[in-house]
Length: 159
Image 1 (cartoon, rainbow, N blue to C red):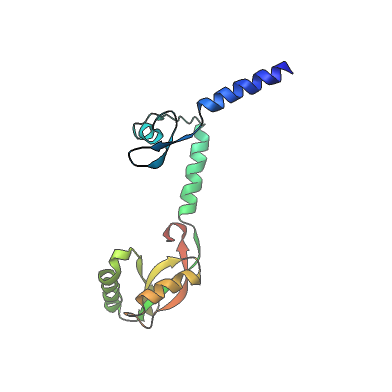
Image 2 (tube, helix red, strand yellow):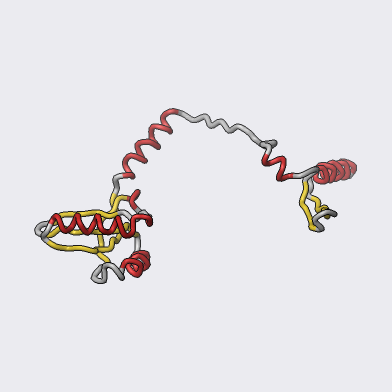
């Protein structure tokens, strides 16, 4: 019983020493949080800066690297927006350049593919048709005939 009381007293002292309190700043008239002084100032001064060291077997690093290299080239079913389809190769690249000029600030990937006998100018890389819908609404003014097509995409292409 005495041991429990001592443990409770010690715990309460430790908790009180590291507890939050609120102080009213008389100049600004607002409540300020503190942890035995200005906690935010201590954070900004790197008072709690630390160092983390991870030790692991080289085989784990090697396995993780192999898994990463294998997965980065894997392809999954996804969707793109088709803005040009035709047999004129130059026109496909003109449409690509025109899209980059018009919508380049959005950072949307543009791909020109050839599948006999047509060239395709495709934009975006999405997992679902619903994701493509927002992009289609955005570019529909300039490319009214744009439509969603399924495509095989690398995992690292998704937006």
